[in-house]
Length: 163
Length: 365
Length: 102
Image (cartoon, rainbow over all chains, first blue to last red; front, side, top):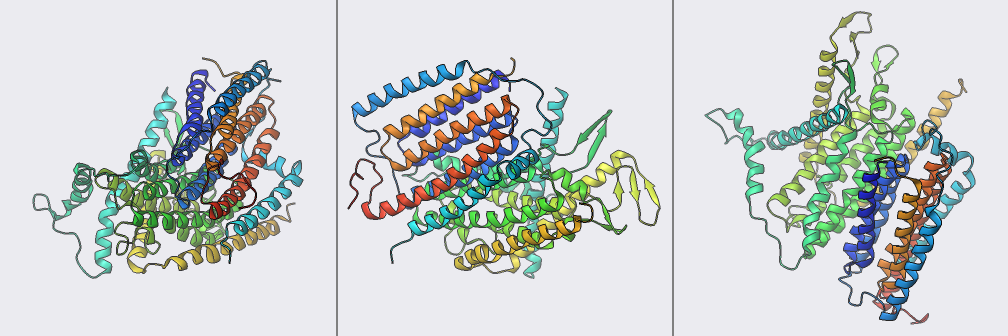
């Protein structure tokens, strides 16, 4: 992906992420999350991961955040009264966060790009992903389907009103 | 540079097709509803005494009226959300047309241009993604209106939309199983084959149940009658967009019609051959009797685009007729139809299709 | 300008992860904490996809597929728990939900 394009997208993504964490109104946070997810999807397309990009929009932006919005509307949450924890908590968290950021950036800055050959044909297309999913990762796939079933049953059971 | 210009031109053509179809779709609706209800309908407007030119009233004067009206924003609303909701309602639907193919190839100046604005490998999933994004417009419109009736309409509307999205997705999976590709242009090209030498192999012959499920789910997604409880004009004033006026109201109305055209376009593309004219190949007609009619490639392309637009109008007409014939569903009937009717039906369709496809492929395996 | 090097993607992912972690630590509204967790998961997704591209291996994208599925399941169950908790305590402020019995 073009460097200039990447810088613009990265700046917007960071702005979106800050919007999620810093906005006082939870609905605004949810919308900032949608924007961040969209921008990440664009980055995925730039990384030749087309199927993952579209799945990101369908699953994350189109379902999970809608679920968040539903819960916010159901609980009728208005703008937060007390947004952040106490002063010492914020100071400690900022210090820890900066330290973690410095550590991570130092760790990944020297990442070597790896064997730079031509990408195999159909990289990131549905067929190659599906091939891997149903041969090498078949057990994980089956376990994930059971996990989803458990999650559905659990969510319905938890959210039901008591008889 | 030329590539960018070509893509821009294709996008412009698609947007023009959509907006023009939508524009006279509105007039269509008034006239067709009049015919169904045994009255004359809109016939007062005329320009220079020519009544047929009255369609310009619907195409130009109506939108102009909406745009020039005062934009009333209620007092205690969240202005950002109030502004964003109509945008999020109409933009994802317009953007979906990027993957709808409106012709085969246009051979011009030595270049062969594929007539699809965005040639995505994952076209079908892209359609599902954008339809999922359209829910935000409804949710935010109801929430941001500071009006409990709007909120009620929005909650009904969004619950309805996400329920029927699932049935729509499963119907699409059956189509994907049949054609083994997610790319819409490939699916349309595959429908050019001839069954038993004379029958065009349109999708509806392979997946009739998926067609019915998809059409129903599509009408439910666009919240048209018989699924229009979120907007029920006799109960909730205008439902989730009650508090909108002027250009924003126009955008919500637009999203209704754009989705009608979108459902028509998708049904044509997936089930009725898209731009395919029966027996028309790239160099002319090849009738089953053996006779051929050679045609220049521009004529072939023009015929294919014309066929696409005609089929678009057919399915728009079908949705308009359905709207003016059926009464409205009650909300629990609507949810029951979605979850206990269409969902098991489309699941059974997927399983049955998979079995049939495996059995038909076994001699080759 | 040329193609972006891998480390730029990883730095962006690290920044997003830290912003998400800060959100979890500092915000009091449980739903916003949840959204920050989703942000962290997405940062990890970006790392996986970037490495998948750089090592020309589809495994990274398959793992992202699983991360998305697990995140969806977790979001559904977590929000159901929040709903059930709200019914008992009428609040979603993390500072006020401090004791196990009500």
